[in-house]
Length: 246
Image (tube, rainbow, N blue to C red):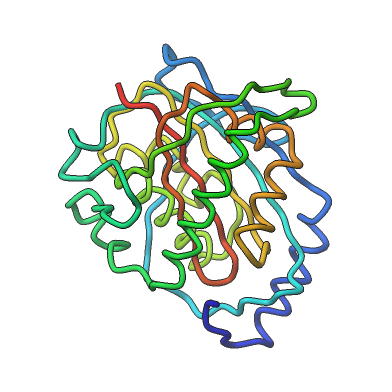
């Protein structure tokens, strides 16, 4: 779906991802609502931090791209309706928080938005079924997640920032993690979590990849989460930000 550009450069990035990320996944359960901050997540550890979005960089969508993913979670939240005009509800009527940070990702390509909506549908279908998330435990069926404008802002900004600045992590090169991004989007939370992925060429593939990783699966199935924001960016960068408003 997304545009193909600069194939030579992307092949180089893909080979690096295949070497370093393909065998590697990590995740962690949500931090209790009493915790106000987190730390970076790798190898099943937990944490939180934010990221700034910048202008898009040329990338290639390669159906044969190697994949990698990571996840993390933290705590503290607020309803999107209470945050700078962001809305909670149907993806068709979604409005992001009206501030400089979110305005940078408000005008999103229609094909990217369509993929974000597909991820939402697939995630809610998985939640309806319940799941065995391996070391993270078995989860009963959970209520569907509602898409949230502030969390969508945070997720899109992180996917864009990873692509533009050429990194793959919950923490950006400035040391900011999901908690900072979610705060910049003005989401007042009681709990939150984040999954990221790189290289998966479709919504079906990325959701399957997350479900096959214990920590990511647990974030998707966590009944404490009621809202979600999904951000896709050219080059197969994916972010899910989960939350529950305060």
